[in-house]
Length: 411
Image 1: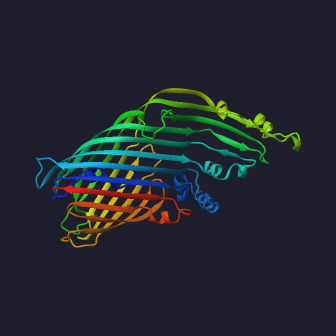
Image 2: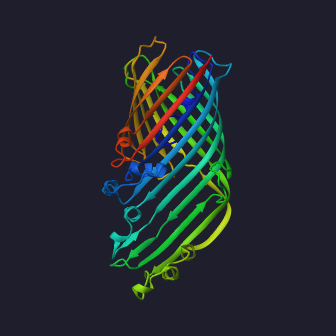
Image 3: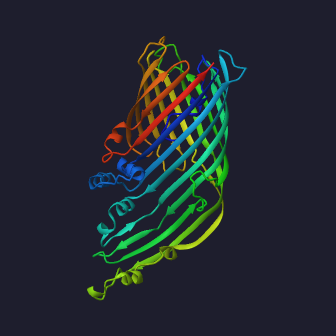
């Protein structure tokens, strides 16, 4: 998914000494330009959010803010065709993966209202315009073919069958909340919609839709840096270009207004449950929901477009740069660079690597991380993070990433 540099070609590539491989890939991401990691940790572990953490986030809040989380688990198997030779490989690959993504766009007033309540808006109106939230979870079964050629253009494509598990699309516009000078009454208006997949589903892997998608890439050999005799590559890749047809989605059309004068108590001796029951609105849905409808719906995935540039600086240092963009995902262009340092000689049985990661954009600002990698003719493994600093100071910065990969090579 976005904010990762593990591509379709990576799980298809087979080393020269192998005929096939099987592998696992796990990755989880969270980032935001305003929300720090204490919000993410609280959502998972219920750790709570401190006042100091809220103050740090308030200083970063802008007129337009974004946040997103993405999770992937993938099992893949790739093998060489009998038509392969030393200069040209025809590779078949299949993979099964589970994908989850949530992203949101919101304004500064929405952040302040959610984080601090409406007290600071006394005598003012909080505007919640152009708020968007997208949620999707699906399971993918994919088959692909890759043509790798030494010193020539390589290319590949895969087609996937998708099983939709969860879907949500929430949008608010022309929405506001006015609080009186002394905070004793509020007035609100709302306009927008809430769309959700079948709400009767309880299990996160329940089947609520079907779809299809394609992945494709083309890799061009280059030697721009001219640092050694080995060529690098310039690669263009398209991921998750497809759609899912959801059954029995529920749509709430929102358009309403609420004026609440607060709780009026004739005397202190009359305070009781009946006072609250009589004066607090029983069902806000009746005030704001104009209509509801249940129907089948087709939604497009958020396709990812990426450009990679890889080249060796020396025999022991490789440079990997990437820029990507995910359409319709409240996402900013994401730029990443990875430097891979070989720590052992090439003739060693076990080869160890140290990876440095730098990134900018996506759902957040600057990210810095590191990773460790081991390669053997029979297996390989990598463990790393792209947001090490932010993970160590969760009340100050946002940005969480952990990725873990294993592969087993077979002759």
